[in-house]
Every structure is written in structure tokens, then in C-alpha cells.
Amino acid sequence: MKIGIITFHSSYNFGSALQAQALIKTLQGLGHDPTIIDYRSRDFDQYLLLTPRHPRQSLKVLKRLPRYLRRKKAFERFMERYLQLTDRRYTYENESALDELQDQFDCFICGSDQIWNLDATHGVVEPFFLSFAGDTRRVAYAPSLAHMSFRPEYFDKEKVSELLGRFEAISVREGETVGLFQPLVAKKIQVTLDPTMLLDASDYTPMTSAEPCEGRPYVFVYLLRDCPELVASASVLAGRGGTRVLYVSDDDLPIPNSQNLLGIGPEEFVSLVAHAEAVLTNSFHATVFSLKFHRPFRTFANDKSSSRMRDLLGELGVEVCLTTDVDVSPLARPDWDDVDRRVATLRQGSLRFLREALS
Image (cartoon, rainbow, N blue to C red):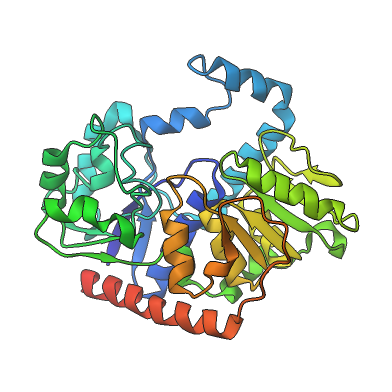
């Protein structure tokens, strides 16, 4: 079956790129022919290197232009290597052109990532709800709502209800958020895994073959959002015995014995997690890859976007790896065999959802 996927695939965000790659690989494994629709919503403007609408960010980029250029090239290489994109690029300025895709695919999938986080998208972005699909089958695979509530001015319930009513099958990534959309549609909304959790660690061997730092031990720190508690915890841990810290951030962090690797791409990110002595993060996908590669980790879940981390770690029985405050205690050593068994069970349910939705 020819499947068109619409998601966040082109932002310079590790998780966005990796979930897109994972969904493609999963669908190929199920015998389908997937293609990502190269759609750039208005949100993509924030990833342009320089934009007059964001003078402060533009000034920051100019100060570190070589690093940002390296990052841009790294993500573009990743897309060329791992993502199959439509020949034509679509944007918010020519959304009506998406209608031409109705005759090119047998099914459309929206998801994963936060395409249904209405606060992040500043309202309903209709292509992320497959508004252009016509009579073609629509499936939602694990889009993230991220929050348990939306700002009223962004939550057009009538529009969401209309769009959801056209779907053949609907799933979301976080159980806690189902109650936001379920009252708006008769079809049962299921909970499925982020696509990166549908793959095994061995599926990432091409990305992890080269060890960072020539095999020298390090702790990997990754902040998706500002988190003083995480930085403070990493600083204390780095001060104990001179532990080396590698991190990726738009800003240099006050962590002793550390190095900012701003400029790397998704492949290097995966390798950094895979070979780390430990991982400190507030990122969902850094958490996922820590679990996948059996790396000791601590996830800081202290903002309103943390429901997906709490859901995941609760289901896997590793809530001990979750914190909301400064925490410098020794990292827990989960029972990885038990974690793998639980992941396998959840994976079976998610793959069953895909098979049934596409049959």
C-alpha cells in the first residue's frame, strides 16, 4: 500500500527527525511503501537561520553561525539518507496544492510528534489532521497532544470534531490526553507507542557504530527546554571525580568539565546516548533512547509537557528514573530484561493497531 505520512519531519529537532525515520522503517517492515509529505507549516519559520520576526534569535545565530550551519547540514543529510520525501514541497502558503496527493496514495497517516499540540501549533493546523485527503483512508498514528489542556483560543472543538470524524482509526501517544479529544469523536481513540519504540536497538546500528570521544567515558546531558534543576544536578555530578559532560544546547551551560556539541545531527545524537555512561534529560526521545540502549538515566519532568514521560516510565515500571527537582543521588539501575519485556508487550499492541488500521 502506498502511504503518505504528514508529521514534523523537517524541524531541527532530534526527536522529530528520528520518529519520522522510525515510522517509515516500521511501515516498510509491514510491507508498505511509505513517503513523507514534505509539508512545512507556519511553525517551520522558527527554524530558519535568520528571520526578521525573531531578532533576538537571529542575533544568537549570527554569533555562532558555523555551528548552526553545521546543524542545518547534518539534518539535511539525515533527511536525504533516511527519509523518503515527496518530490514537491508544500507550505502553509500553498496548502490547497496538497489536494493533488489524493490520487497518489492509498492511505494517509498523520503522526507522530506534537502535530496535535494545539498550543504549539497556535491552533488547528488542518493538514496535520489530513484535511486534504478527500475520500482516501485516514489513520492517526500516535500524534502527541502533549498537554492535558489547551488555551481556549487555540482549541476549536467544532473544527477538531469535524476533522476527527473522517478518520478510519485514531491513536494518540499519551493516555493522559485522550480525554481532550475523545468527547469530540465517536470512534474510540487508542494509545500507541512513539514510532522510535517500534524499533530495536539493533535497528540503529548504522547510527551507533562510531563511538563519540574516542571511547572516553562521559555523561550526556540534553535539555529540550530550560531546566535549572537539571543543570544544577549535572553540575554537582560533574564535580564528583571530574566526570566529563557532553551536551547539546543553544546556550553554553555552567557545567564543569563540559563541552557543548551544538551542530550535530540526529545520527550523532543517537550515538551519544548509546555510548554514554549516563543520561540526564528532560526530553522524551532522549528518555526513549536511554531505555532502548539500557543507559542509566534520569528524566526531569517538571513542566506541563511531561505527561508523555510520566505515562511511559509508569508503564515500564521505572518511575524511579523520574524526578522534578535537583537530584544528585546515584542513578537507578533498572531491570532491563523487565523493561524489554514490557516494551515488547506495548509494541505488539501498537503494531496490531497499525496492521488493523491499514488492512
